[in-house]
Image 1 (cartoon, rainbow, N blue to C red):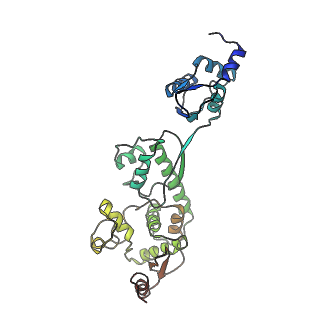
Image 2: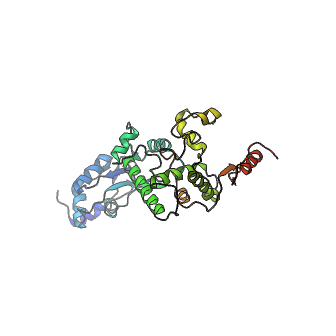
Image 3: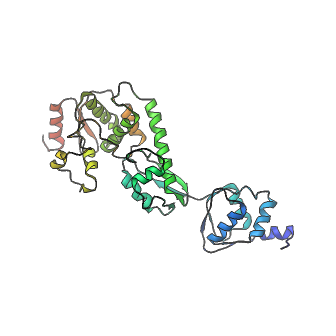
Length: 317
């Protein structure tokens, strides 16, 4: 095929024929120009590979194609398409993973996301942990809650790896700035505490005092007696109503029957809870009870606590 320079320039400004509009396609990492053209044609972009190759070489850009997810729409020209590929103007998906959610809840959201490639489908949690190269009994607490942007059709494993790296960075940074004398043997124990604080805190202003209650209890060898750990231990059998028999049912996560921290985190804590766990309020409070408006009443003695419970939980005067 012989095309003059003027003919190539004319062709470069003509609209491309697309199977649909807008049309999404992905260029795999390490793709050559020839491979990228093949991937685009397979996705439904009807473009002459020879002419696009000549156009790229004319721009000295035949080795500068950037991988990623892209979108083109009706009216796009070969010149515009090439510019998009050279500048890496990728399209992105986004996913918000929420503070206080469990891994089970996170995984359900990942599985429903239309812009992710679901490489974890059919894998057990233990198999996902192995694929991520981690040594942990559970992914609970090991993933940082945030909004993640990603190239469309990226692997859900890649997103989980990013969330894990983010949590490691956040935990290391907060551990390095921790208060002295805390009753934790490792950053992992602080992470467990942060997850409890995350589930127990209804108001931002109370977070450091909630942390103080649990830290003080650990220091004194008192039972933590926190409902969210019990609920976590009940798993899918929890029906939304925590009963007295549940508090008496001994599981590894029942902090009414077992001393110390539970064996793993019970949710994904955010940075504020990490910070509170490692920098609790300087207070000798040992109890708290919810007012019913999202805030809590904190007490130093059991008598004070019982009065608060009577007032706010039992309707006493």
